[in-house]
Length: 371
Image 1 (spheres, rainbow, N blue to C red):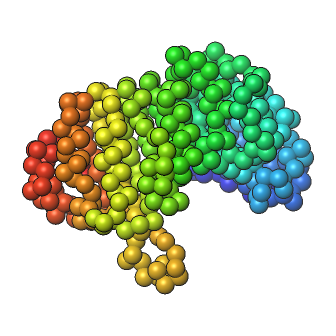
Image 2: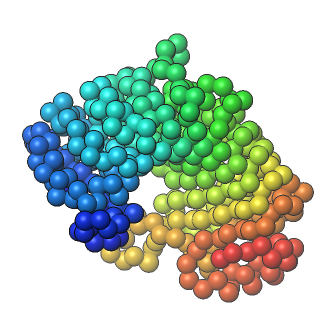
Image 3: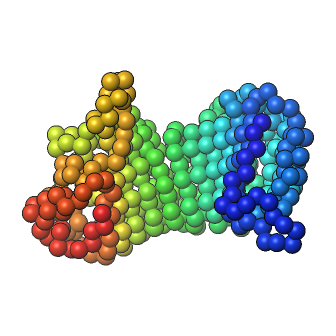
C-alpha cells in the first residue's frame, strides 16, 4: 500500500497555525496488503493537515477483483472530515465499504469520480452514488458491470438535496445508461447544465444521442464533446442517427477531435468539424471551442515503432478544415450571439489567419477569434 500526500504548502503545520487549504491524499493499494492498520499510523503523522485534505483518491492495483476490500475497513475516513472530492480508480466497492464511505464523508463529498470502476450489479453503483446526497459533479468512465439492466429495476430514490449540475461520461456509454436514467428520472426537473462526453464508436454515438434527446439535452447550457474514434469519424457519426439539435439552450460548445489520421485536406473525418457545428440549434451560443489532435508524423521514433502519437494540430495544418463551410454555418442567425471562437493549435498562427481572411472574409471580420 502506498499513501501519498500532495499539497502546495509544507506538510508540517505548527500547533495553532492555519493548515494548508489545498491538499490531496492518494491511497494506492495492491491485492496483497493487509488491513488498514498501517494507514492509521500514516494519517496520524499528518494530523496537522487532516482538516485541509479536501481531495481523496483511492486506486487499486493491479485489478479491482484482486483487492479484498473487506479486509480494508476505511475507518481512517473518520479522520478526514473535510473531503469534498472523492476519486475511485480501478476499484470494486462492496456494501460494507459503501456504508463506511457514506457514514464518514457522505455529507461532504460534492464531486465523485469513478474510473475503471467495477460492480456486480448496476444497483450497487447507483447505491454508491446515492450515498453522496449533496453531489454537484459526477464523472464516470470505463465502468465494468458484471450484468446489464436497462428496465424494470427498483433503484434507490435520489436525494432531494442532490444538486448535480455537471456530468462527465466516458468510454462504454452503454454501461452508464441505467445511471443516467436514475439521475434524470424526470427530464423536466433535470438540473444537469454541463456535460462532458467521450464518443469512440457508433454505439457510443447512439447512446449519447438518446441521452440528449430523452434526458437532458433541452436544459444543457454547456456541452463538451470529445470524439476519439477507433476508426474514422464517418464510421462513428455517419453510421448513427447522432444529432445535437435537441440542445436548444446551449451557451457554449467545445468540440475536441482526436483521430489517428493526418490533418490534410483529403481527410474526410475533418468534414465532421463543420457538420457537428451545423447541428447546433441554440440561439444562445456565446462560445465555441474547436480542438484537433491528429497523427504526429514528425515523431520519427514513433513512426519507426509503428505506433501512433497524437498531438495538437498546428495552426498551419488547420487550414485543411472546411473553412468555407464553417463560415456559411456561423453566418446563420442562430449564431448571432457568438462572442468567442476559440481555436486550439500549436505553432505560428499568422498563416492560418491570413488564409481565413482571404477565403472567408466575412468570418474573419467577425473579430471573435481566440487562438
